[in-house]
Amino acid sequence: MAFLSLFLVIYLCLASSVLCQVSEFISIDCGSPGNYTDPSTGLGWVSDTGIMNHGKSVAVENPSGYSMQYERRRDFPIDNKKYCYTLRTQERRRYLVRATFLYGDQGNEDAYPKFEMYLDATEWATVTIFDASRVYVYEVIIRAPSSSIDVCICCATTGSPFISTLELRPLNLSMYATNFEDNFFLKVAARVNFGAPSKDVVRYPDDPYDRIWESDLDQRQNFLVDKAPGTERINTTKNVDIRTREYPPVKVMQTAVVGTEGVLSYRLNLEGFPANARAYAYFAEIENLGPNETRKFKLQQPYIPDYSNAVVNIAENANGSCRLYEPSYMNVTLNFVLSFSFVKTHDSTRGPLLSAIEISKYQVIAAKTDWKDVTVLTAICSMSAESAWANEGGDPCVPAHWEWITCSSTIPPRITKIQNVKGQIPSELNNMEELTELWLDGNFFSGQLPDMSNMINLRIVHLENNKLSGPLPSALGSLPNLQELYIQNNSFTGEIPPALLTRKVIFSYEGNPGLHKGAQRKMHFKLILGASIGILAVLFVVFLGSLLLFRNLCRNMSHKRSDEKGSCTSAFFMLHCSF
Image 1 (cartoon, rainbow, N blue to C red):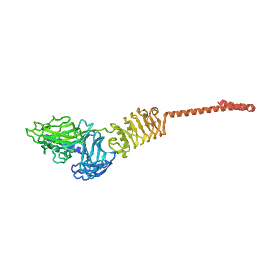
Image 2 (spheres, rainbow, N blue to C red; image 1 turned 90 degrees about the vertical axis):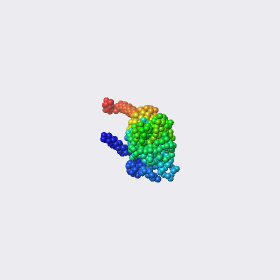
Image 3 (cartoon, helix red, strand yellow; image 1 turned 45 degrees about the vertical axis):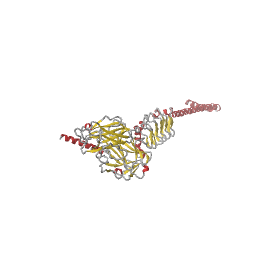
Image 4 (cartoon, rainbow, N blue to C red; image 1 turned 90 degrees about the horizontal axis):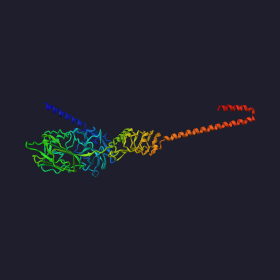
């Protein structure tokens, strides 16, 4: 009874986990006119109308045989822009991201599309349509670097770039962990269900994480060829315990292939290889072995590192039958043409067995635009959120830069120029310590220039032909590497920082009537003061001369009119005394 209670608790916990997992699924039908529930899976799909404001919805020709998601697609313009979907994530959680493409247009074979797909700033795949009736599936497993990721379509070389579906699937915390996920993500190259009863894929609801397991019966070029003689298919209806790290679906583990003649071998092509890869092999002993029977085998191929000495004994490794054993090869070098063989050991009575494989390429994560620069651009965009230029999406610089900025070719990319935007220059500009050139000329910026004291590497600054006002920050004069400063045709006022006039800086400030040199203003005041004193001195001399002349006249007149002498002398005496 206690065991049954424990089993029920475990079952309910697992069921609750799966339900939470499904509720976090994001399924976007690109080009669909509305939302709906897929009757075959019970999963809800949302239209990208309102999510993607670019491109057009196009009806797919001959979509029969495919699910509802492939009745329409979204086509994008043929230009130098990128078109991005933003998916919300939980930082540092692992996700499976899947994009699919069905062209379906049989009447225009000369223009089959070829274009690029990016995840954030990292090239994910070159999508090349060879067969218009085939669904091309691309999957990656990532640990989310932030609260969102961007999937971008761009860089068409032939035809119109397009997309059919975009899906995000959260994974269990233990799944697909690697030692390299800070610098690499896993680009899925193969996920194969061996011993499958039909060509149908296995996915949700059989796989609660909605991975797509291809059938080994799928007939296509260079896919699981060179099969060894004596290869047989087996299956069971028994439940298989899959509670390990990667949780392959029970339905996949209930089938397998067996090399009855002692060898199990295949060959398949791996797109994007040679490369370093993470490989998984899935085994479960689903045959009833007698007490004296064993199944032991080795992987026999020249891989780096060499795994030929590792012996697989499923029942022993998995601690019993119908239990999963999943050895993984953390970092193995594989060629474009992958040939692998499992060969039974001399003391084994049964041939090798294989239920499934997964192979994923390590894809180097490319550097995104410097986050400090992105902060500045985000602040600028927030001031004009209604404008089309402020909603281009994706990384500002990679794979194609936004129309209104120019980026450097450095790692990480840096913003070197901003043009044709409106608003105020945000205070976050001061966080761009590594910026060497700032080109904000010819925009519609208004308001005051923010503090720039932290931008110690600035060499060239262009702020001309805007509507900036207020004083020039004094820190401009103390930027140690400043060589050129252009601020003409604005409305700056006040005194120019003296250091800008004394250092060897190319400085142009015409067209700012309210801006003046501090030294010139002081000289002007001194000139006015000196001229005023000079004028007063001249007037004083003239006045004294007039007094002396008046005195002489009075003395001359005293000889002619003696009767008036007293009065004149008295008047002069009074005037003289007054001085």
